[in-house]
Amino acid sequence: MMQNPAIYRVHHIERLPLRTPYPAQVARVQYIKNRLPRSATLVIDDGGSRGVGDMFVDAGLDPIRVHIVHGMDTHWNDNHVTVPKATLVSMLVARLHSGELFVHERLKDWPTLRRELLNFRPEVTRTGVETWNARSGQHDDCVLSLAMAVWYLGNPRPWSGLLRYYALMAGAAGGSQWVLSMDIGQAVDPSAITLVEKIEHPGMVDFRDDNFKRQDAA
Image: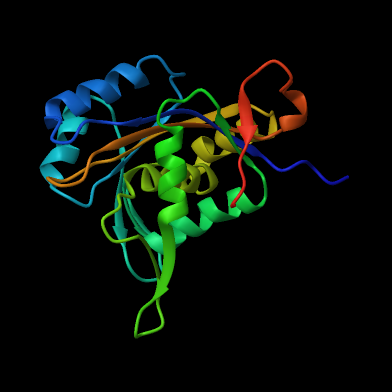
């Protein structure tokens, strides 16, 4: 019997004001994460100042630190991982095309994310490598924050032994997985926070009384 695909529910999208101090950004993430299940994972973009990533560690948030790169390969080193930008975006596009992504219709910053998705385009470099970038003058922080969450939910941290066994059993039992992700902005780019829940067996969920709407690639 063919199983229904998993679904991804976007519960929160938030673009922080430009130049929000980093301690305030850490505090905001900590506030949200403290209200999530203890098993929720925090994923952050660690491609800027490594000192900022250390602030999340010092706050006890134990983040997965993603360094977005060009190329083809993903490499793990404990909580640090390098991921090609094309890999992140292609997984998000796949979820959109398959109709597996649902966004709560009342999220204030959903129009911002939707606009970024529409402005995000693939480009091929002279060496034949596919890259994804926002149109000139546009931001992509909400897209990258969502893409990191979707990527991690499909490619969790490599585990071994009992940890991997229990993680697989939890997925088989139909439990939800939660990821809080953050694209950390620089001087000219705002930071964005996204909260995504992955449900392995959507047939067990009643959608009639909620406000989540299926999204597509249009």
